[in-house]
Length: 369
Image (cartoon, rainbow, N blue to C red; front, side, top):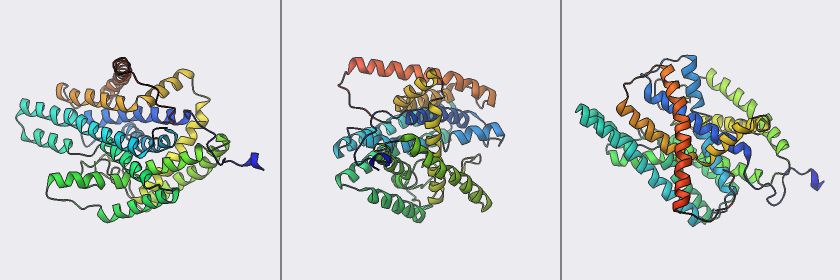
């Protein structure tokens, strides 16, 4: 009877989980693709099938999946003490603002000097004070640091996600006249169109990942686990998508009018995207054995280097806006993307190799994500 149990009482499934490397590698690939579309195409973009596909790939399989994998990785990481998590959170939070300064403010300031348009300067300030995924990730680590200090159990994480979702419904649409207050409010809920990853909307996915990681690390039979997940999540995605469409509910994964519906979705959106994330991860597990080795190695490398690739690609894209004649047509956007991916990959590998030589450190342990 003991051997038939799906979950053990203690961790039995340690080490890197290949399916998580695959979904994270695809997430950064899709992020690069959708950012090229958003930055280089003429707005509002036409809802062609190609544009809609690119935008879809840049939404559910990208940020929600990445944050889910972050939550799973916290279970597998050996550096998960409250202090370790808090330090990591503060570093990522700082990195987010450093990136925003060079990517958003400085590039827009150069355009302002060139054109003399005050609108360019105002846009740079607004985007610098925006809430991108790195500030959100920093807040996520700080949340888990606090939860670890308070010795949260799984039920507490579930309650936190539900309470956060309820608070998000109450606060949604609330804003301030002060840009600075709007920024701090935007870190927690979507105060403006520049609050791309408000905490209360997006914390659901790291929490879901953390809870899933608790199952995965004790799983005796991953194939059985992912079959169960697929049979539950895939019908939920299909049924939820049909019901939401029937009742006119909209969560912005085809947001060519830039309404902010994707960034500021509510609890119903959380349910749909969470079901998608679990189904996507399950499909990645079953696809892993059939993928060519070179694809698996590439996606795994991107997974390990995802933060560095994120920063590098944004620096390339943002400064391309300054020097290139825009907007581009879709073929030129795809050509740019095809060049951007290997350049970003090579730059990330080179940077990390140089960093490793200059600042060698002992291995930090085996992580899942």
